[in-house]
Image 1: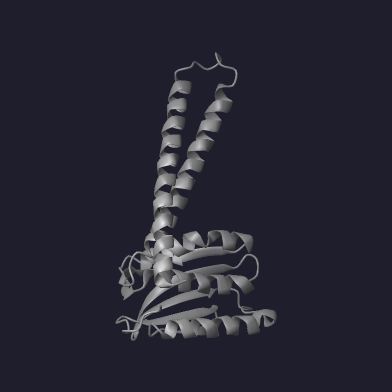
Image 2: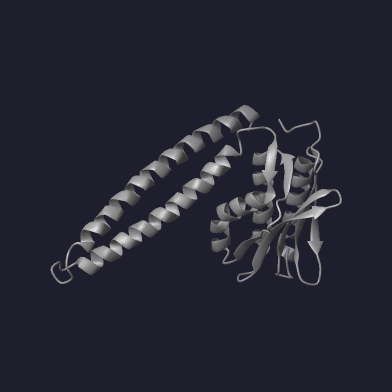
Amino acid sequence: MKREEVAFFGKISAAMTHDIRNVLAIIRESSGLMGDLLSLIEDGSFKYHQKFHSLVGTIQDQVNRGVEMATRFNQFAHSMDEDLSDVDMNELIRRVVYLMQRFARLRKVELAGAVGEQTVSIKADAFFMHRILGECIALVLKGVNEGATVTVAALPHAQGLELVVRTDDHHWPPETEAGAVEEEIRKMKDALAIWGGSINMIADTSHSGVSILFSRVPPAAQPG
């Protein structure tokens, strides 16, 4: 998509998720009122008291889940607001890991972000950073075995900043996926080169995965 198209998509998505959160807030308040009314009824005087009380609790839990989903997607939509901004990498990891959880569940894999207390930031296109990190997570998830763990972390590096997506599955990538993984990495190299970034496969005695290096000073060229 062109930059203008991305910005428009982000604008509409942000507006819609804001309205969705308002709808969920009304449902939360209404279910809370139902719970209050149920608490006024003496046990035994209403046959379905416990069942309704349980249903109210379920509604509240799902509303909370929906609010979290809408909030994360709203934040993602706002990543399309500007071409360049200061990107908090710890928050980026939290958000993208959350947004990618469904893909991890389908693979029966644990996906987690290793976020430290120290703020790690870089000036970049926030939407591009979401995209490239999500693609790296998807790439690693594609070939891991069930029960594996995939961890995402941002680390200071001599060149600027390193994003690491790694798994404890020593057999990643499997031979059947090796060619496809190499092709995806080649495509990402081309995209990252515009931002002065690079990507490489990593493998040691305990982990396998991919590593992305970014310069803290973005180049003048920007993706169209």
